[in-house]
Image (cartoon, rainbow, N blue to C red; front, top):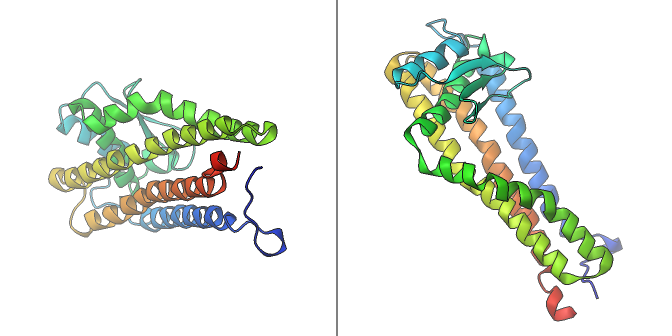
Length: 236
C-alpha cells in the first residue's frame, strides 16, 4: 500500500519542504534582479559597455576565436562553447553600467574556463546528456509508478532526479570560479576601478545565490521524495 503522510485536515506536511524551496528560489531571484537593477544605475568611469568589456577581457587572455554578440531578453546572458560565443542580453551588451560590465565579465569567465580546459566545466559539459535524461524522465517515472502501483518505477524516477541534482551541484564551482575570474580581471585590466569592483562583487554574488538556491530547492524536493517513498519496499 502506498504510504501517504497526512497531518490535520489531510494536509501533507512534506509540502512544507516544497514551499520552503520555492520561497528560497523566489528570494534569490528577487535579490539578483534588485541588485542588478540597483547597480545598473551606476555608470562605469571608463564608459565601456558590456560588449566592449567582454572583448577587452577576452583579448587580454589571448582569446580571439570567441565572438561577443547581443541576444534578446533580460539576463539571458550565457557562453556557448559549441559556437564559441559570449551572448549578452539587451541590458548588458550596449550598457555601460557596473552591472552590465560585471555580467559580461562573468560570461567571459566561462570562455576563459573553456580556453584553459577548466576541469569542472568539462565535467559539466559531459554530464549534460545525463542530466537532461534525468530531468526528463524523473517525474514521469514517479507518476507512472504511483498510477500503476509499481515501486521500481518510483525508485528509478528518484534516481533520475538525483542525476539532475548532481548536474546542479557540478554547476556551482563552475559559476563561482567564473565570477572569481571576472572580478579579478576587471580590476587587473582597469576596466573597473576602486569601489566599482566591490559593486560588481555584489552583483555577481547575488547571481551566484540563484544557483545555490536552486540546489537547495532540489535537495528539499529530494528529501520529500525519500520521506514519501523511501520505505516503499518494506510496505510492498
